[in-house]
Image: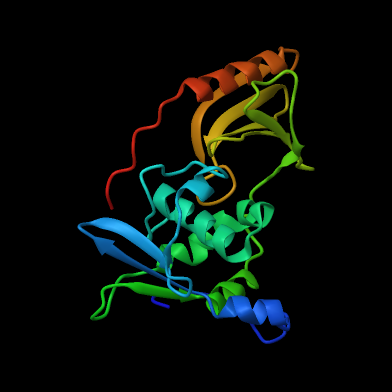
Length: 228
């Protein structure tokens, strides 16, 4: 593979089963045609589908990218994990970390001007990833007080709400005598990219503030990502 991918120690990599060994033979290749990013499952002689990953997370409807941390690489990371492991929950939990440590490092270099990523390299990289796990919704069920595309998320340290169709979160943090409610995009790590926020008194109607931010997110039209 082209790029720096963490290598797991022999102790951290599980012993491969026959099914796992079959998956290890999978190879993906990425290149550009007239400037457009194209990714193939080389072992199965087919193009990696964008639509399947968009049904799971909607970062980049315009297509895949690689070589940096952004929405296009996030979409590719999700698509690769979904295609390789065929496990929606696993892909959704780990695609941000996989983007940060693997997809962001992919480069089209050499005479063929493309990158290659094997199933063995994916498994090895995944064995080292412990950070950036995406918070998942509680049972996938909406809250009656939120718009239907929002979910309440399980986190032991704070209240978090997740938009199901876009990388938006609402995080509730407490202070000494007030609440800070932040609408943000998860991005590279845990909630680093605030889009809007409210600071309200402890006795304020927090549910109303949360509803206002969900509506603001739903109304927000994000600009398309510039070509990298």
